[in-house]
Image 1 (cartoon, rainbow, N blue to C red):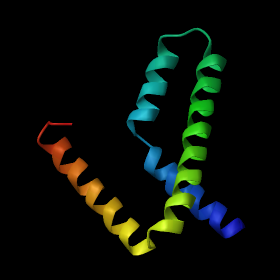
Image 2: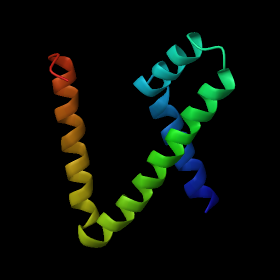
Image 3: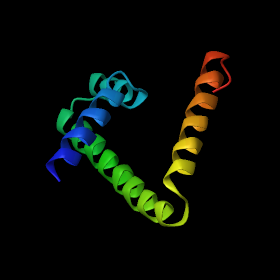
Length: 89
């Protein structure tokens, strides 16, 4: 369990650094006096989206083989990356 926890923490932590979620949170904090409110709102949103990801991922993995999930996720990231580069996303 701790190995999964640590690897997931490191992966998500590094992925979120400089992400639009972090930048949005910084912007909200800069424009609000209630930093606690911004913090609690941000962590609540991340908890709920993470919970949805775990539940949906668990459900999908029972139906679709892992290699197809990896292929689909990789393809989606490449498409999003290309769209970002050409300014369409």
